[in-house]
Amino acid sequence: MVEIPKTQKAVVFETNGGPLIYKDIPVPTPASDEILVNVKYSGVCHTDLHAWKGDWPLPTKLPLVGGHEGAGVVVGKGENVTNFEIGDYAGIKWLNGSCLGCEFCLKSAESNCPDAILSGYTHDGSFQQYATAKAVHAAKIPQGTDLAQIAPILCAGITVYKALKTSEAQPGNWVAITGAGGGLGTLAIQYAKAMGFRVIGIDTGDAKAEACKELGAEAFIDFATSKDLVKDVVAATHGGPHAVIHVAVSEKAIGVSTEYVRATGVIVLVGLPAGAYAKSEVFSHVVKSISIKGSYVGNRADTAEALDFFDRGLITCPIKIVGLSELPEVYELMEKGQIVGRYVLDNSK
Image (cartoon, rainbow, N blue to C red; front, side, top):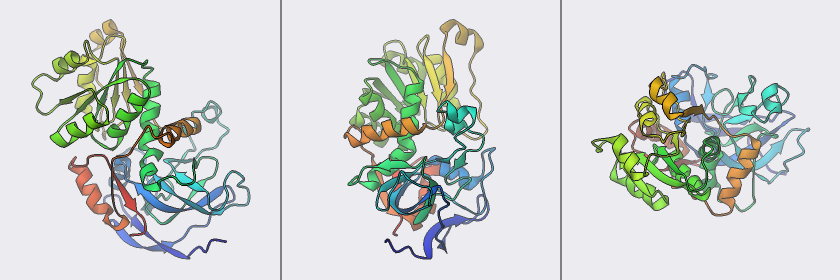
């Protein structure tokens, strides 16, 4: 039997935008349908920043332990859990649980379940050493996997993979990725390449340009230095991208993409800038026959598929590992747009 301590280290906030407190809290007890995961590593997502700031229309629970990219080892489970054993590797995702019986769950759209439970938002998440998750939704991770590397796949990887599927792009098509040098963008480039797409990255800064090209982007446009972004993107993609994946947290980026996307192309909204609107000039929208779609998080099948890409060595995560106690500094860099790739927290520090 694994010895489970009574208390653990965690980062907690009691009010939105309030102090991020690194302190001891009790280790949770798993419910009958939950597993208890000793979280070794947790990726830091932009959603975690929104949860802390409380600037989305969906309220968080308070106090809250954030985080939803937790990779670790199962150390406890409820009496009704049959799909995990003690010692298995498991991942804690954004979608912690759902009802499994509503029209959305029955159609494999469980992320749209009205009773969805969200890790690090409505349920204490992975910025703690021990966290619980509904066993039916927790991700199965193969033994021997590098848990630090796979942590960002549990949200960022699954999310961009689902968005690329939603775009309905075909092998050989051009796909533009905004925010391409960030945590989601660097993964989106790799998934797009693995799925047979040609990639153009849109972001700013030499470091992000270099990272995007190293990961497989055929072209990169710096939106801050480009004198005519629409013209430059159309020229680089020989007529405009067939699909645009917006992981950038920018309302302006969404609007301008309606101008450079190829006729009959698809724009997929993923990033969630607070209070933003997707704006498209109606005449051109109709004449070009473009589509704008929203893509949330992947279902259980998407999760297994996204993890399989990683397991086969087709996806790597550009990460920087820091201690759990350093989360406030990570948020500061995130707000300044200075993160290339993904920060991953070592929950033992």
